Length: 304
Image (cartoon, rainbow, N blue to C red; front, side):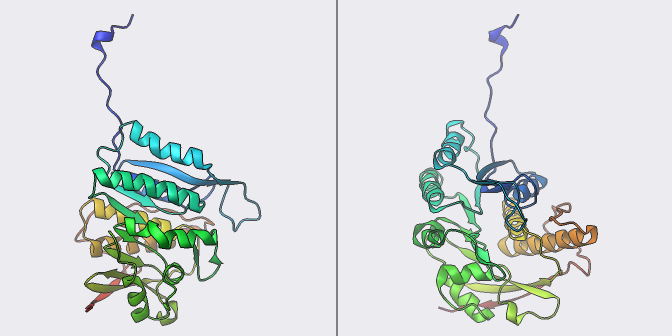
């Protein structure tokens, strides 16, 4: 027989991160990458799917699609209704299924920002890449431009996506920096451009350009000759996790680059068709990289 007087009051599961992006049954993209990465950094995560696919589109068959807008909005609203957002520290946004999801998500975030103006919102505007071109609804590009990106603290487009968002050339580092600076509006404090200016890469290297209102850093890291899906999702989740755990922006970006390189090397060694996740290194300083993981960077100041 139960004695109701002895039942302890229940508390909601408090969340550090709400991660809004794709989900697949098979593969390592979107929340299939972000959730284990963030949890490995001791962060509590609620994954909100935008699409659910059997796998990524590069396979011969694919099932699934975008979540109905009513469901998607309900997921967001019920997180608030359950009292799970009182300790929320960040919202991480990746692949969106359509412009309608972006509109609903923007409204939900604006309401949260009225109560929590210090909320960290990090957006990876997943739209396409140099190899495959645009692979989302073209209307989504305009939705990003008009009102969505300015709600974020930081953005992590690749070079192709930066060109789509700004309409500016991004063929060299100076142009990448100039284009990224045009996105520093509203709440946006920084832009991390992955796979930046590929025509300028040295052999077996890649570049990330980290742009703030006062300076830019170019981070050079090894290029691993495999191309599994999900590396951008892994970079953004790792960057977000290290920021929440106390690293500064530059440190977090370097850690994220190293982690992606380690994942690619691990995937290549295993000859796996999908991205394999190595253990996350939680230390923010004193990290000793192997020769294969080592990154370098140089900084220069931006003058208006």
